[in-house]
Length: 152
Image 1 (tube, rainbow, N blue to C red):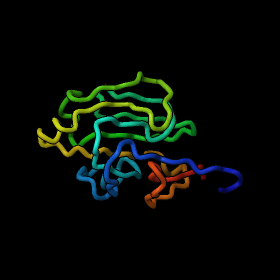
Image 2: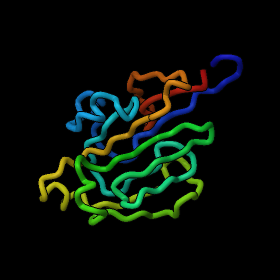
Image 3: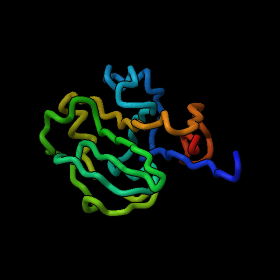
Image 4: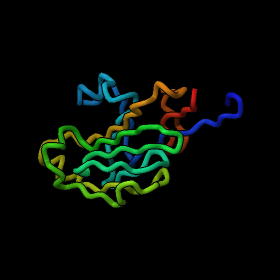
C-alpha cells in the first residue's frame, strides 16, 4: 500500500485456464492494442464481472465494458471473431448502466456451439486505461484474483 491506498483486483470472469495476453489468438488483443490483460480458456458458460462497476453493454452480448468505481475501464470479450455471430448464442443477464459487483453473472453463452462452429472460445479481459494505475501484471494465485492494481 502507498499512502493508505488499497490494492484492488481484476478477477477471473469464469472458471478456466489463464492465458497470457500475448498468447491469445486475436492479434489485436495479443499486441495489447486494447490494453493490458489476460485470456481464459473457459470451462463454463457464464461470464461474470471481473471488477465492481457499471455495465456498459454493447449491442451484441459477445462483449461488454465495465467502468469501475475508480474509473477503471475493463473490456470483456467472449470468443475470437464472435462479432460475426451478430449476438446469436449470447445473452445479457443484467441491464445496461446497472451497477454490478465483482463475480456477478453478466453474460450467458453457448460455449459448445461456438466450438462446434470453429470459434476460439477464449474469454479476454483487457484493462484499457491501465496507464492511470499501478498494475501488477504477475498472475496471482489468490482465489479468482488475477491482477492487482491501485491508482498511481
